[in-house]
Length: 193
Image (cartoon, rainbow, N blue to C red):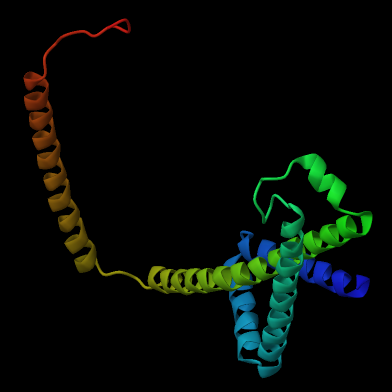
């Protein structure tokens, strides 16, 4: 059992490191290589089988831990059962072996749950980083192209039109605010009222 938990803890540490590396601000060329490596892993059948197999095993262990902890609800466990028993009755009804079993089940539940959660988080973050890399690559391509003066003039004219619209909206907002303020009474309300 300790070898199994050591492997789960190692997987947890590995997932935390992977998630940390994915979230760190890394230069674009390094991110492109990282995303290429994740794409190679995603297309690898052996990697897919390993991930699916380990996810199923961890899921089974997670469910087993929940079922083991449900056993203690009959003994007045406040996490799963009703609160009808007092703490003294709970402490008096659990033997040291049952307390140890409960502790190990809770520990395994937390570790396997964290591993499963981080696995899901890694897949989501990889998807987000892939989109980020694609958009940054597109931006770099667009910035490398020289824009024509005609396009620049067209966009400058569009900006001027938008600025005129913004000024009109500001005037309209000020007028509406004055109209609203004129309709409200000028009575001062103190804290004591």
